[in-house]
Image (tube, rainbow, N blue to C red; front, side):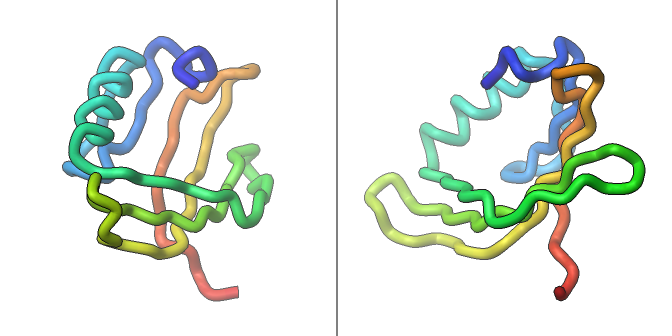
Length: 97
């Protein structure tokens, strides 16, 4: 997955807050996250926005490492590409519809 990200990707730290910059920060973030929680996202819908970004509505399920449910909801993952790599990802709450 990291190979699909630009070297200087801008990525949300949706778990702890703030933003990450670059593959190394994203890698470290994912490792920290997976040591504490078990997040899963399932794509529900894809839309190409007018500015070329791709919005992916996902069903996000977060469990404790023992399998206990912590959170489940739909969110939007919005990706901006340069060529074939992701240069930025945002997380938003979906609007109705």
